[in-house]
Image (cartoon, rainbow, N blue to C red):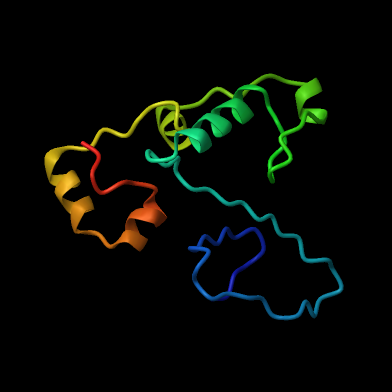
Length: 118
């Protein structure tokens, strides 16, 4: 997949991917962002995510304060952001719950859902 300057490319991390050598005279700038919805079946991880957001801790498992902690304020979250973080639970209707039960364990793990939640 070819991209132009300024393009945003999003893919699942398990998709094989790579980049060709940079043949220009300019540096290649990339930002890697990863996200996964909070899992309903891992309360400890959910609490760690919420604490990290509230206290503006650094990521990558370091959980320490840094420049971001000294300046600014805790981000305000939209309703989707609150669900992705784990502050609010996802509401799942009966049909969606039936669909989740039909998923493989891998599909449920990738989506961060349990097959037995109501």
